[in-house]
Image (cartoon, rainbow, N blue to C red; front, side, top):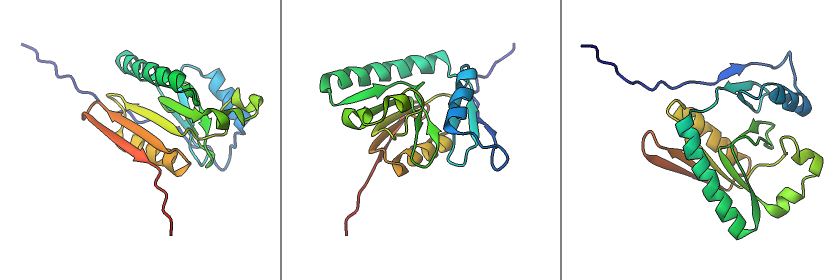
Length: 176
């Protein structure tokens, strides 16, 4: 009798180190991503490219549910705009990140010139959600969540179905 064990391995993104020899402008990076649509590509704050495979169908189903719920709330509330997992944002530190779901205040969004909104808009969403898939490394996602907070996200949810936990990240302002 043969017994099969189902083991979910964590898969780290492939990192292409670019600096100091190759420097991609924001337009170069956008064009690179358009040419390689089958991959999820992000850029960290020092210009390295992080290349990840698409998520599995089960994870994407759950992500779709999150986006629908955020979308319904966004439409009812009317004060902002929502985004799905394919949208990228250029953060103040220069990184280009794509959260699984995001929300931005409508006034702040509309203040960005239309041409910049067509690519990876230079803005950090006020609210983001990351959904950990079976193969995502928790430490990498936690670092990404902290990066969002460090760049201006006010509230972030990291949903870890693997451990059945939700990590909440908030911007905390301290006054003297």
